[in-house]
Structure formats: C-alpha cells, structure tokens
Length: 369
Ligand code: SF4
Ligand code: ZN
Image 1 (cartoon, helix red, strand yellow):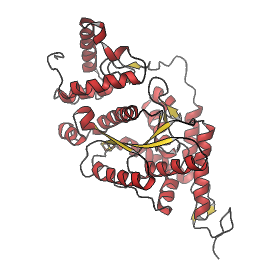
Image 2 (image 1 turned 135 degrees about the vertical axis):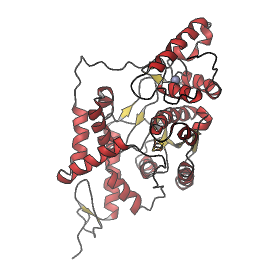
Image 3 (image 1 turned 90 degrees about the horizontal axis):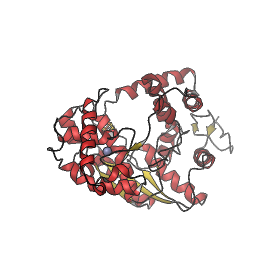
Image 4 (image 1 turned 90 degrees about the vertical axis):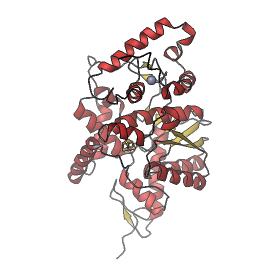
C-alpha cells in the first residue's frame, strides 16, 4: 500500500531527513521553503529595498539558495534586488566548468551576474599558486583570497549584504573543527547567522538550519541545474575528518547536526579569553585583526617566491612586513597613507582597487628580507 503524505494525504515519495516525515514532492518543497523563510524572518536578515548578492559557485548549495531566495522574494515581497556574485579562482577543469553552470543559472533565474577573478584581483590564479606551493596549503590561500574577493565583488556591485549557501552540516563541521583546534575566537563567531557587520559587508546564511541532504533532495526533485564535481585541488583533510565524525554520530543520534549548532550557539566564553581586535589592514584596508591582513601576507610570499610566508603559526615574516610597513608609513606624507586610516566600507574598496596594481608588481626594494 502506498505511503501517504503526512501533510496532504497524497502519495508520499520521500522521507524528510530532518523530521522523518513521509511527504509528497509539493509538500516537501513547501516545508523546505517555509523553514528558510522562517529563518530569514526570525533573524530579521533583510530590509526591503536592499540589494543582496548571492555568492554563487554553481554547486548545489548556492544554486538552491539562488532559486529559493528568488521564490521567497516573490512570494513574500521581501523587496530585495538579487544579484549573483561568483569568484573565479582560476582552477582549470573545475571552476571554469562550474562558472558555465552559474551563467546558465543567470539566464534560468533572470538575475544579474558579476564574476571577479583571483587573476584580476591578485595577479595569481589558483593553478599558478598550486604550481608554486603544491597541494598542501592551497586551500589556505584559496579561502583567504576568496573571502576578500567576494567582498570586493560585492562592494563593486554596491550591495548591502551577501548571502552564502553555508548549510547546517557546514556549520556543525566548523563548530567541531574550532573546538578541536581550540580556536575560541572563531568558535564564538561561527554559529552567527550574520557575520562581518562591523566594518565589512554583512554576510548571512539563510541555510543555517537547512540539512545538506534536504538541499540535495530539493535540487534533485526540482531538477535544478548545478555542478557537482569536487575541486581538483581539494585535500581539505581536516574538514573531511570533522564531517566523517558527525556522520558517525548522526547514525546513533539523528539530531546531531542541529544539536552541535545549538551547543555552539549556547557557548559562553570566559571574559579572560583574549579575543582578536578587528582593525584594517595597513596595506589594503581590508578588515583584519593584524596590522597586515592574511591575504597581503600570503600575496607578498607568492610575489617574493616565499610561498610559505604566513602559513602555520610562526609569523616571523608577517612581523617583518608589519615593521617595514610601519616604517614606510611613517616616512610617507599623511595623504598617501590611505587605507590604514579608513573606516567606511567604500574607502577600503578604493584603497584595495588602487592596490591591485601594486600587488601584481610588488616593489621589492621596499621590503627587503
Ligand atoms: Fe579552493 Fe581548496 Fe576549495 Fe579547491 S578545495 S576551491 S583549492 S578552497
Ligand atoms: Zn591586506
């Protein structure tokens, strides 16, 4: 006898991973979309009239996010202007193909699309970086550069917010990784639904409570056009272990993902724990808890043929750059000091834009070590 949908009494065709409910397709779509809507409303993520950039990689999460944001924006009159924003890391055989998917999504969803590339922003593609550094720390470069690239793209588009497709599984993994690393600063931030509100563009995660399995189901039944190949440079072993661990725990406790997120949200941090103080990078103006941001340190290493600069815990080289940068600043006229003194969002963009040329052609005579 066919199983009935728990909501409408029609024929169920799936069992919801999150609740165990037997549902028909339409009731699943509706339940999925309504939960995302509830997350958006409860957290007051948007205000009518805002322009919101959807970080789009062509993968399942961001493709479903773009689709659902459009559905909810129309259904509930959020009054948002939505745009797709993609970062081209320069990974041949991976990102070039996934960007083709984003371009098709742009047509399918009738949304504007902006693509920013590592090559144009930093003068380096990930292909070239991997040639220099091999496959060990490539994701450190890629992650640091992507974060900044997304912000820069968003600032060029003059958007108010960025939304990303981070889902509940991603957040639970990040909580576990930060616990294992003892990274209290990140542990405290990683469950926030909106981050980066002070001094940089707010980033929101409407899928914070959405299970990855349900995103895959939604994309599959809706026949959404997404790209599912893994990055050819993906070692990311640490996250892989956290993921495998959570999957094991989930077998005996199905609510493990939400429980871990809830634990992360409820943690209180001792007041004696030193938290990083946010400022702006003296070089590029990007938000940073150090005088020179991580992207600038990594880039300096690449440009100088010292790609391990800024990798690992001993930042001797970072300190050298900071000292030299201080000297440079103290010998320059005030007007030329630029980004280090800026506080608004727009000013760092201009500063970063003017810096992109310097980044491609570093003045090696200034920083000698
Ligand atoms: Fe970049 Fe690593 Fe992700 Fe590949 S797996 S896109 S190199 S962060
Ligand atoms: Zn910087």
